[in-house]
Length: 448
Image (cartoon, rainbow, N blue to C red; front, top):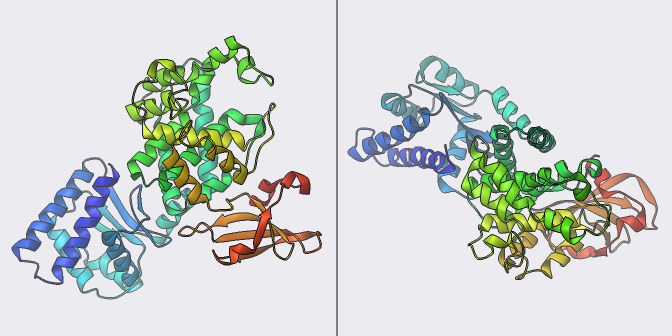
């Protein structure tokens, strides 16, 4: 089910609780709201036997939908769970209107908090409603560990590419699952996966580039405020965007020098080849929006890219976001024919392409979300200490967390020291430092 269905459920529960503050349960307006709410539950039960609603680190979720942005209805449920001192509720198939009314009355006049509430629900609560156990919530939190999600994405794309190499049409089911987790995590913490996208595996560039473009596309989509459903489509399209390269000679793909005209013509065929593969995949991978991303990620904003035969067609905005992600990752990755640039330098280069090759609005939003000094930037502060930006603020990306690596007289510290700077204090940063000159690999410090 879509984010919209989950949102209707949240809004319905919040509205029912709000109404009961004004009217009794038997009031016609309350009865109508409850009927509408049960219809929303019934629609979801048509696809699944259990519906989970709970909190992940204080943020409301319904199944695979996370309500990370400001949402009054979601805030109402967060307050309810917090006041009851529980992690969430599980609704089982068979949940009906009398049970809904029973649950609402218990919530409006709770018999206790925490363990007392759980004990009461176990003995006297609605038959098809259970208090979500802490263990189950922790299991969900474990599933959203950035490293585990990133690692799972690498495995999934490896399996998909192997299927294509063997001449099989892969299923997109596992890819859809991992992208849902990536999208959820991006909504909750837009920089968690972004930091991992800096961990390049040069020996497995094809896999890591695919996952990194997906991660970056999700960051751009969040910055551009696309819906959660679109965010998943964007992440899936990013993951599969280069799948067509598997149909091109490895010698051409890995050639270190300049390509001949014939070789470049072959390379330019990969979006169309990829779109053909994706359109035949089982599951959500074959959705037209995903196909459009794969086909159009090299069709520049000013339509000077390729494939030539679709230059006059309207390009998906999600494809334009993927194009930015593709360019950013390529610039920040070491290849046989180029040295990588820093995140900050990559943004400077991309801005020179704003309005021509790349969509100006999407690029501006992406750059703003990363802040003046993006994660992965090595900087010098006014004390002459040198540190790595390992985190930026969610609400104010100019709030930064540094790992100080070099001291005031240039000495390398035995262990990095954490320094937090808010937006005003960040003015203490006097400039960027080239990590190559200092002889360090910045990604090493994301593993510590």
